[in-house]
Image (tube, rainbow, N blue to C red; front, side, top):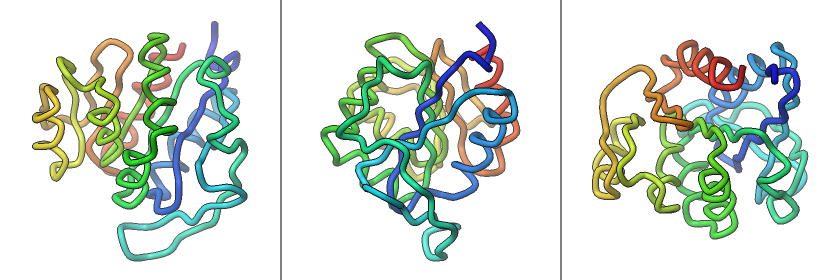
Length: 177
C-alpha cells in the first residue's frame, strides 16, 4: 500500500502548535494521503505559535465523539502545550489514542504530544523522545526517554520540537510507505 492509499487522523484541539500540524499535514497531503482533523473542539479550533501567540483557525473535519480509530491507517499527534495538556485529560482522546496502539497502527507524536501516551498507558517500555519538559512525566510512565531528533520504536514515531519536523515528516512517510 502506498501513502496515497492511506487516511491519516490528526488528533488536536485548541492551542495546537500550528507548524506541528501544518508541516506533517502538508507532507502527507503532498504524498497523496487523505488527512482528517479530529477534535473534541467542534467547528473550528485556534492554533498557536508558541504558548502565547494566536495563529490560524482550522476547521474540524470529524468531531472526536464520532471518530473511530478503525477508519484510519495512522494517527499524528501535533504538540503545543495547551493542546497536549487538554487532550491528555480528555477520556475520549485517551481512548482514541489507545485504540491505535491496540490495533498496532502507526502513531506519530511531536513535542508535548507524547504526554497523552503516558495517560493512555502505552509509554511503558517504549523508546521515545519529546519536548524536554515532558521527559520526567514520560520516564515516570515507564518510557525510555532519549534526546534525539526522531525516535522510531516499532509503530511509534516521536520528535522533540518544530526544529525536528523534517526528520519527523520523513519518518512518518517512510513508516507509511
